[in-house]
Length: 202
Length: 202
DNA sequence: GTGTGTGGCATACCAACGGTATGTCGCTTG
DNA sequence: CAAGCGACATACCGTTGGTATGCCACACAC
Image (cartoon, rainbow over all chains, first blue to last red; front, side, top):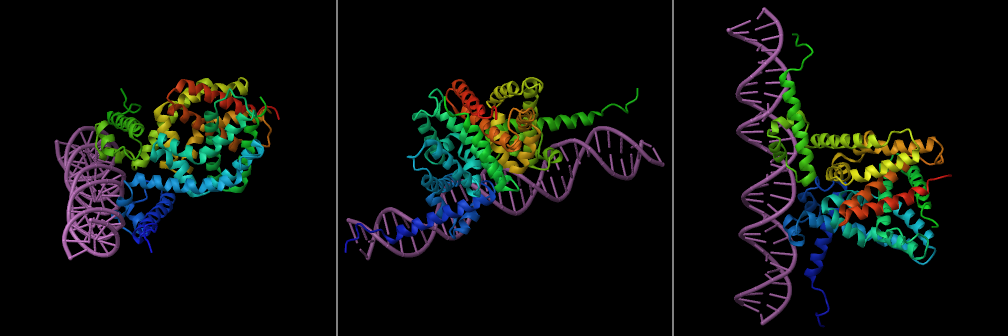
């Protein structure tokens, strides 16, 4: 039996170690934030040492970036389900917003992606990564609205999507910080819908 | 000549030391960010030692909070000039937005208030401080629109203001990160105006 | 003027952290 | 089977935020 196509045990072990590191990184960065989450605790929870960490990642920032991407990948997977990209663009955007508001209630997304992402990674890196994931979905939705003539072409798609994304993020943070998240969630939805009305027609 | 109403020299010295610490804190937090700005460098630039710092402030966070407030106070002073609070609420909002976008181009506001504020101070503390300063202006402006019947009362003033504020901040960050800030500034202005149109009438 | 605080710092020090240099062990490969 | 390499563990280092203590000018009581 040839082993050429198989994967050696060591590779599985290695991938498992890496995954454990990323998972406990997501947990601890969410719980304590980037600065207060120590590498010793992260590696301890993953039952390895710093040697393993620095074997797999370049440093704390690189580990954060990996955690960032893991969170984003999970979010995009769920959002993509709700936005088939075929129905009415307005309905699609609305459905996407609703799902996004739910995502923004999750602590990991709040802390790692929305809050500390731009600070730890630097704005430019954060922008580039976001483009590939969550923000890319918003941007795509807005772009479809423009291309199908639902919004005047005079507006910059990129900038408009950025502003909407900011409103979404802020709304999400408001929900998370509220003492009655469910009620606030409804209010945020209303406020967003009211704002998006300004985009209709031309 | 009585000295009862005068201020002893020592008090002047003390206030001067405190001010110097806050000033160099604003500078270095802006340049390097909270984590990478060391207390030794901050105190060094202010030509004192850590002893002075810990005499005036409870720690690094407290110093950041003082720096935060200094930046906010300066911003509010300039914004208050443009928003007299008497003319047409819509015109007032527009003027305020324009001035705010200019403010958001300043690195100190970007870094200390918008980016690291919620991370370092915690969301709740950041919210409370923002309420007193910049965000309070946006909120007041929106509230006036609602009270004068320009916007339906069904919407939560607080939440709507939060979402708008988020859009503003995001727009400002987009401007700052752009390679052609002037052009992007115009685009952000257009996108915001388009969005705010949705609030008109009822 | 001489003791006695007291405010306003400076100095010396500590624990914890991110990061590096080196050692070790087992698997693979020639 | 020896040589090499991948996947870590261990030991250590420099820097950092924070603390404990010391010092000195000045105010005030007597």
